[in-house]
Image (cartoon, rainbow, N blue to C red; front, top):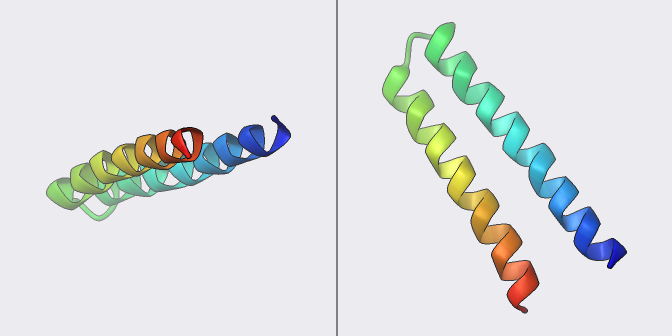
Length: 56
């Protein structure tokens, strides 16, 4: 139970970091396609990590 909580917490921290860097890419570096792809892939990675942990 506690391991599942820690896995989800770590995945949330990674998701937050990736999304914030994606917004940085969009707003500061003016790299809109790169930032949107980074945000999309980080959400997909979060969902994949959490579902794979709870499936196995």
